[in-house]
Length: 114
Image (cartoon, rainbow, N blue to C red; front, side):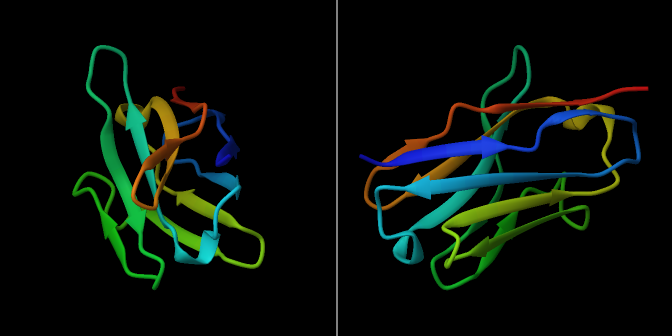
């Protein structure tokens, strides 16, 4: 059974930084594409960043240059480093794993507010 466990969310002031982590079990992590999505109240879930098994990355225009996705295959963990956070980044952030089927974590709240 594939499980994804996120951590690292919280409250941060505008301009601050947070790093989200997602530990994956139950699949061959090194062969799995990973991504971070977010969902703000009243909005649809949207892709924030993705990384393939080979390390290629893709970012939403709204976060490119501020967020960095990375993976550590030995630790079966994917990270999202978020810098220069803005109030509009406030959302529940979900870790996603794709290997033929989508798997989701439980979500972690990120709130950017002064």
